Image 1 (tube, helix red, strand yellow):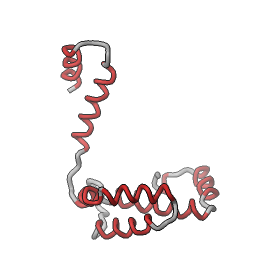
Image 2: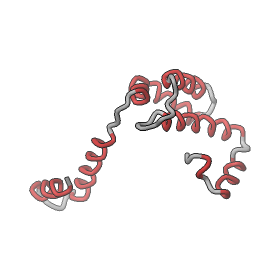
Image 3: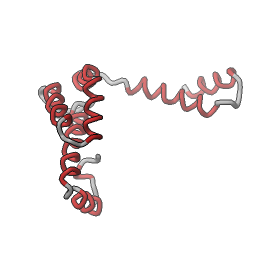
Image 4: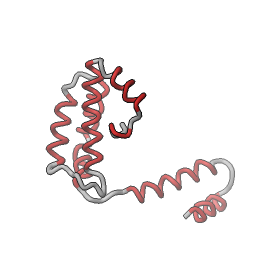
Length: 129
């Protein structure tokens, strides 16, 4: 899902060959549109669409009727969490910093599982902060 300009020649040729299949070409277009919507609505992006909710609604309609089971299943999941997805596209805030801290804590806990008591775990968490 890299940007088209960042793909090397060999990968571009392989992708062109794979995309000759109509179902792959349709799926590739839908996935690329969704990825572009997410990138354009990201924190710090200057190219935000005028109405991300409308763009998402159009994409969901296309994805739910595309005939590709994997994409349709994904679209059903997005539709179930539509309010959260739209909020993520519209709001200027990111929870990345908090998610990173949680990820770090979980990594330390996994590394320490079954090895030591709570005091040593606490020390590792405090030293990592």
